[in-house]
Image (cartoon, rainbow, N blue to C red):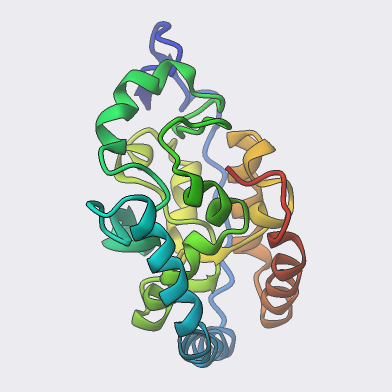
Amino acid sequence: MIYQSSNGSSKVNRENEFPLQQIQVNDNKYYLISKRIVDLVCSTIGIILLIPLFLLLAIFIKLEDRKGPVIFKQIRIGKSGKQFNIYKFRSMVTNAEELKVALLEHNEIAGPVFKIKYDPRVTKVGKFIRKTSLDELPQLLNVLKGEMSLVGPRPPLPNEVEKYTSYERQRLRVTPGLTCYWQVSGRSNISFERWMELDLKYIQERSFFLDIKLILKTVFVIFGSKDAY
């Protein structure tokens, strides 16, 4: 698979760098049933309990930028390559996607992912909700709808998937999630290759107790994390 590197250098064939290793997915029937029950119960309770916080965040986002929407919708890729709209509290200026083109050369992560630690498109409110991951809370709706799970690999953008190797594309064999190994292991400070390895590791090892463990670890690392941006 060939793509243009973020620093403008010549195209690189990453497919040869990552030969296909078939990943064994844990698709145990009883595990999947229990996972969906936990997703439904927790997302429903979470949405109800967090309504006051949702309203407060909506007010702050509107006070800083009255023209832009409170909720940002973006097409992501889910299980088996199926597209869906992911929901987030808007943390960037309204023309963020247009400004991204001029910032591509400043990408700080190798691979088909775009991230800048001090992204000028992020608003003041956005910096706070990103640091605490509060911007991700509307994705409880995605969990409720079955498009996402509480635990699973983060859903990628379509243009990122186009640059995946066959090996990396295997992370699309399961339902994406709100949190996974990546979120509790350094997040944006982890290389793209290590990120993919952690996701594939989860796919093989996933179980009811591992999911609970990752949810609890996420709660402890989410606030005050220096690795989220």
